[in-house]
Image (cartoon, rainbow, N blue to C red; front, side, top):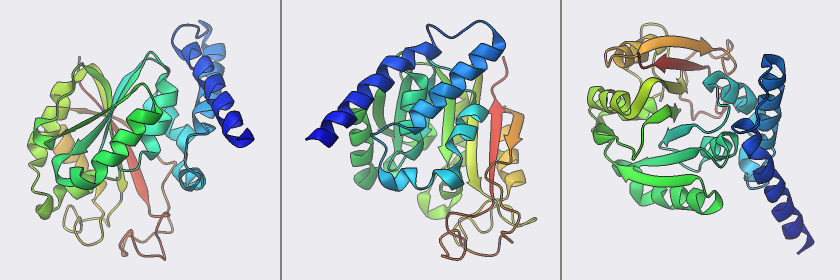
Length: 257
């Protein structure tokens, strides 16, 4: 009982601190940056995060990822195919109570993953689970960010039967002008394009860029925080020799306007 009480108290403290990012963020740029970093630390320290997810932090670099996306409170974010919710949990705390996270589950995986989304919505009042076709991706309000974490390559696999061009166009429509489309995925070997999406579960970054830019997005930057130059791109990302340590890229695209 004591452990549960401590967790509940900690959760209340985190919730109380979260509005700092939207309502009380300092005007001075240096103070503002410090406040945002502190809020990322609170998101990462969230006691509702499962131990298995916390154990992945050294490889997944959550603080750096939140900073690259640029979350500073109050955003509307869609996490597309969140699965168990590694990033959705971080987003829920980082956007604070004035923000909203939409855990968007594709129809193809809904039978297994709707339950994950419902758990997220139960744990976090600012999370809503939605389910639908990727080609008809739509959210009840304009979004600041659409995020896909290690999922885009799956949508390119033939058996998923996704019209990727239509999906990217739907994401474009769902974002506010100036909104961001952020994609994390496993890098494939140079020249592989999309040829190994179903075998190695990798996609060449340049091929992904071409698909996304064709929808009207402008490339807005990348981060190397989850790159691994020791990965030669020859193994499936599920091979135990590389699992969890694959070479990954993170691209940020912006909707013009």
